[in-house]
Image (cartoon, rainbow, N blue to C red; front, side, top):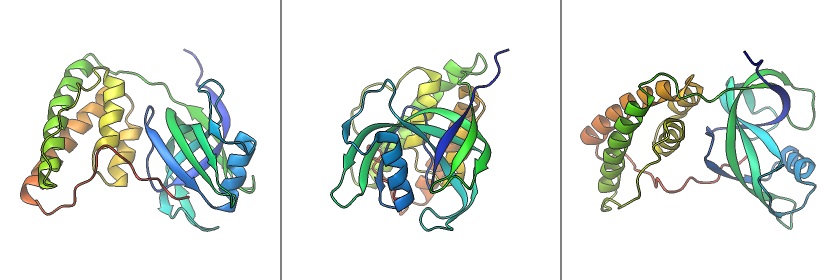
Length: 234
């Protein structure tokens, strides 16, 4: 058995959960994270090639808040590597980033003295489909998700949208649906932490059923634009 790969990774605690394969735009204004971006990119801007693009770890905050020197009290154990794909350097020293989630990691240790931003020792996690039911579960999730998405759109007063087929790969689909569902952070984090795609898809079937029941009985719940995710502050 191959030993898990470990590395030292700059950390970006956020009040959101990033998944492999998904985009995350960020607006960087705190001084410590300006320093992080400058260190990783050299202060330049524009599109960055995928090969060798700088990376940092996005990890959800268990307790605390994103901003302020003493905002983060506790972090979750599992996070996702964010690869910087575009940097826009603003005149006042802030940055706008477009990042892509690449792979999950387990946070082993935090170096709280690595000023000005946190740095962690991490263990990269393998991505596995899981048991033989993964492909069957993927088809079930695709059906449940399409119904859930159309129900949300109907509550928003929008007609169902004609879209292309969802990706058949169980791993890719499991992360896409996890990102698209309107869930609280604890549910989002639990999906990230699932050991494999089959376990994640099983959880998503249950969540989609739960959310559709809630939408049926609570039609005044606010919907969300499933095509976009708002930039997260730091």
